[in-house]
Length: 197
Image (cartoon, rainbow, N blue to C red; front, side, top):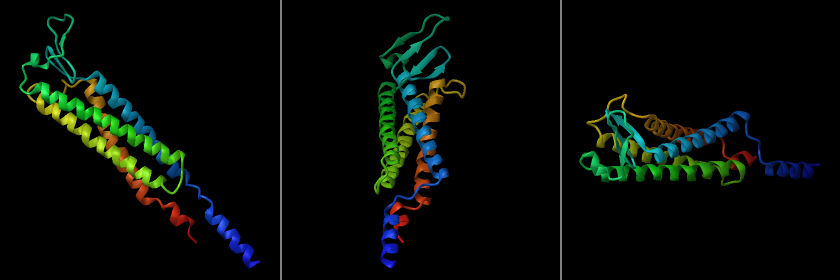
């Protein structure tokens, strides 16, 4: 009887313990919100028009002049805006913003893989994915801050466009999901410890 009970305990020890509904729900919510942040950031970077100051529209890719409610005249040459350092600054802002999106996509991929293919490395993949989302937050924040500093003389609170606020929201979601992901990974018990008797 003793040998049978020992073998039964070993078999039970090898079974993967089930996560609580709350933990699974939180992890799923983090993945969904991260995906939403990636979409918002991608749309915002691709559109790029972030600031409307009187009759001028400033974007990451173009500068537009709007006169007498006519069709906007847009220029890829940002020197037409007559703002010192704008071409170089915008090049850096859009590069950093694009890097934030790419980093977030890799982070999101790791989060999803850690949940779909659960093994002893799942927690590590989740932690790396959350770390990449945190890196995305820093990159997107740097892009936003650089944009605002470049155009500080044109900036008012109501001059920012919807695309700017989309990028701002995406940056906030990157931070919130990264911190939440790292926190839930630290407060839940590792699989290896759960399997020990």
